[in-house]
Image 1: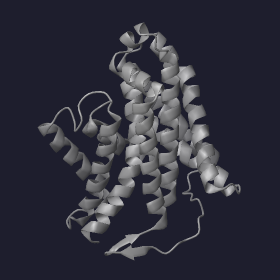
Image 2 (image 1 turned 180 degrees about the horizontal axis):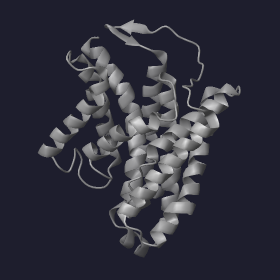
Image 3 (image 1 turned 180 degrees about the vertical axis):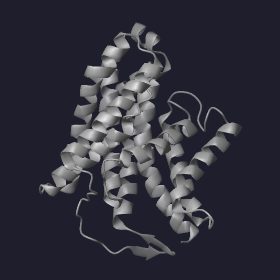
Image 4 (image 1 turned 30 degrees about the vertical axis):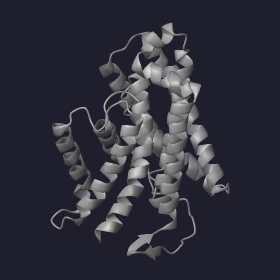
Length: 288
């Protein structure tokens, strides 16, 4: 496979990783939570979209319903788990252990309800169009287009709205934000809404180009965290760039003849380590 085709494929999977990594970095930047259940919420969003789609609902409406379901699930987790833990001032180790337990709960719940078989959205096959030697599949172009739209909306929200300014203030210094009159609990709630929406759309987009299965989130956990760390922890723009870098490097590693495709995740992590040795703070420094 030629290098331009691999780069295009890397941009597609990188767009999905970037969207989900943004949600992960927002929860860390604002809530100081390293949420290892994040990728399993992505899986939940993909399955909720699939359930709506196979019941005859339009794909785009199905994606919205999947996002709403994921947002509700995240808000439930906020009030049952994360808010009580913040009130008790639980340390980061405790939060990580809880998030791992939540990930297992979601994953096994999906397995129990929908089984372990691979599922698809059963969309009609459309022949790929070739241009300059690159095959452009319709679903992959849709994924990139949706990612661009979602990232643009996120940028406008963070930079142009009162909520975005409040989120950046809380990420910078939560105590100062409280003194300034910012309703931190409202910011936290909206953080989960934005995170849930981005994560669910990422899962639905993954389902457009691959099959979905209960463990799909598990295999994307490391690329997500690699993107967040590579881009600069807590910085959504860094997570976007980090996600694209990880996606492209993963796909380009396939062109190395003595490496199989099963090693592409390892290659991307090695690149992350190499970059962090040169620039330990990541590509972008600081919160938001």
